[in-house]
Amino acid sequence: MGSTILHIQASPSGTRSRSIDTAQHFLQRLRERDPTAEIRTLDIWALDLPPFDAAMIDAKFAVLRAQAATDEQRRHWQRAVRLAQEFDAADKYVFSLPMWNFGLPYRLKHYIDVVTLPGENWRWSAQEGYTGLLHGKRAALVYSSASDYPVGLPAHARDFQKPYMRTWLEFLGIVDVVELAVAPTLAPPEAVAANLARARARADELARDF
Image 1 (tube, rainbow, N blue to C red):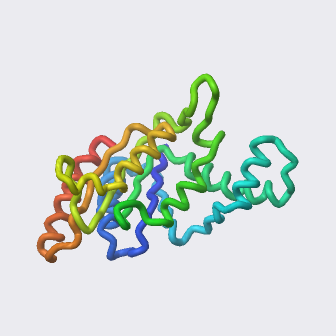
Image 2 (image 1 turned 135 degrees about the vertical axis):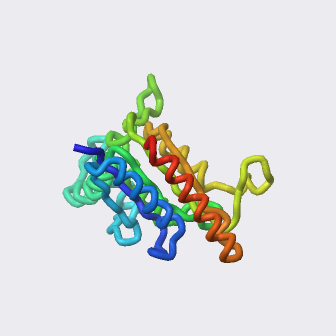
């Protein structure tokens, strides 16, 4: 039985998305290398995400602190737990995400807030502090952005997309992470096509050892 790979699509653009296009190319190479792998696609724009609002926060603390949680609070919290467990069950992750306003699409941030749960994929203790629980898993991050944000240039300080994803995954215990970017996408068509070709070539390289 091969590994389970979860592809989380954070772009709503479908076939027009450069990040999805590159991620699918990467996944095709993984299928060729391991035909037994199970690849699941999660389109977060089609996912029924519970609001992470005051009701969810109240349910969270009522359940986790063993307070007198109501049946409604337990049902509410279980919606988040089910999504977290579905996320945790994967062996490997492929994220395809565009940059929005220097950071993440709001729908991806919503998903992250719902599935990042104490006792499911991280824990805290007075002795150890925060500890991620998803050790041994791997992730590939496929980015796209209208502009480029190379390390060493002033524009890099505006990139809150990549540092956020790395920090979040590390918090969960996922430290084996590879990245590739399609950028810039706000360019003449021939330049965008060349950038996409370079990203696909990089995907070919990364797929050999993922």
